[in-house]
Amino acid sequence: MRILHFADLHLGIETYGRIDPITGLSSRLSDFLAALDQLIDYALNNDVDLVLFCGDAYKSRDPSQTYQREFARRIRQLSTSNIPVFLLVGNHDLPHAIGRATAVEIFDTLAIENVTVANQPQTFRLETRKGPLQITALPWVTRSKLLSREETKNLSPDQINERIQQTLTDWLSAQADSLDPGLPAILAGHLMHSGATPGSEKTMLMGRDYVLLQGTIANPAFDYVALGHMHNQQRVDHPAPVVYPGSLQTIDFGDEDQEKGFYLVELDEAAARGKRVRSCQFHQVKARRFLTIKVDANTDDPTGAVLHALARKDFEEAIVRLQIKVSAIKEGLVQENEIRKALKEAYFIAAINKEVEREHRSRLGAHSAEGITPLEALKLYLESRKTPKERARILLEYGERLIQEGRNSV
Image (cartoon, rainbow, N blue to C red; front, top):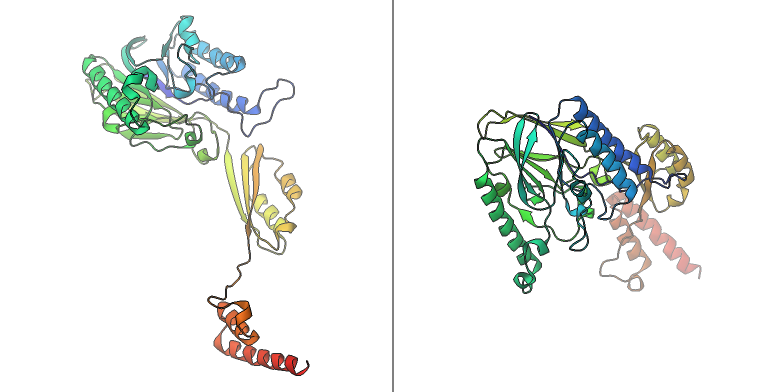
């Protein structure tokens, strides 16, 4: 049984993109759809039995009709090819108010064949070409869904989170106990566990997160734990794989140098519980590159130093952030127009930042400028510059002569 697991698509992110004057759409939409298309093509051409999406289809809770249309087109490619699709609701898919639809609920409303939407905690039994599969779904849950106002009115935010965590822990334990041990079982969750490392999603979080213990979700009743919510790829085998595939496309500079893609999990449906995972492999997609270039331009020709450094970098079609280190005296010699011309092959110039080094001025310690003689001031200056003793002695002698000559001439 071959299961493709991905998450955190976030259609609708438009930062670092350009607006097409004809369509009015951001060029970044093409980036995100191109990554999704690579995944769809893999599923169609590699005998995948289930596509499992673990939340956050869109950036916004109210995605535009265009984003919904493009996502639906690709889900339809899978469903019409007899590949079941399981869509879990993430925090970015939830509506702003109770009673409003989630961003992916339309698939359930229209009863699209081969598409299952999990918008509340529940255990599902799905039929695949290789036989039945159990999926315990834990979508992102809000406080209002789990706790009444009476239960939370006197609690702090941390106490509310603790109550949510305990409620979900108890629910997961009960679901795990009720699973059929003779069938493969997966936990699909959009959540943060205690061992997870946040990535670019730190700037996108909506409110305070609850956190489940890693040991709670890594229940041995589950053959595989498929997660979403963390944007950087991470995996723990404890004892079954506990996996965040990460976001499918790079989102910001928090994703720099990270591989983007999805996981393919192979389960032996005939094996006993705890021995069903035959392989669990990450498959990389081609994603937009983010690149930070740092240049020390403390030279007589700071612009030339930057241009020389850029000539040695491959930034074609990358989103570039340039950081220039330069002294305050040379700052005015940095010609940004010339630098932007040199970066013309970049996909997008996110920033050209100058880290200006200000000249360090020595302090006189306990002395004030008015309270010391010129010769004492010279001595303090030479000490602050760590001038060699012999040279300092000669300079002080010359200084004393000059000072005396100045006095005699008055």
